Length: 237
Image 1: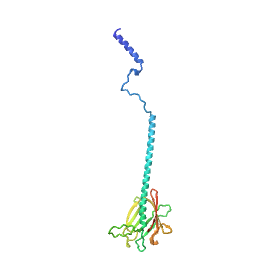
Image 2: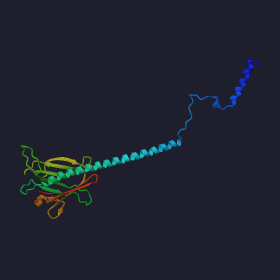
Image 3: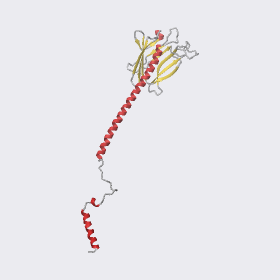
Image 4: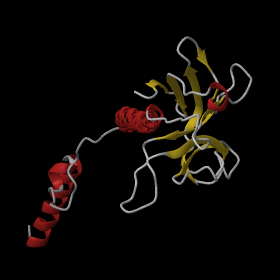
């Protein structure tokens, strides 16, 4: 047998062998082939996303609750500071109230506002007091007139507490006239004043009729966030 015959026989044997052999035994592994690896199923991905969403929701709710608590605490603190400042200022001036029946320019007037029993009160008060600070070499005296009243806001959506100061008083200037107004705050939703005459509490006071000042004054404030603050002040002590 010549060489060409032997080559054809060997080629036939090789083809027979390769046709019956598994493919992975015939084709060698290549570095370019991506090895088979197990991945996540769609259900597993959805479950992971749902768990993550639940965790994020819980964390956000915790931060939101903490933020609301902080805001409420700050609002409460601001309200307390405002009420304390107002009560301290008013109590100091009222406790030093001065009235002399022989001096027409000295007064102590308190007036109740409103007649409805459950309606918010916006009482007013005006009086002369000995708390005036005199500038050096000025003609001011130690007595001045102070008043607190409420006026409607510019937006007409509430009331603002107004403080009046009149440093120069004399027989030529009628009480309640003149002076300078200062807007204090619009957070007061009710201010109720009561006056003690030594035996009973009343809701109005007029020194021009009683010829005296009350023994004590009770101040009750309600702020816009609902807190109530109250103080009783002895007059002339």
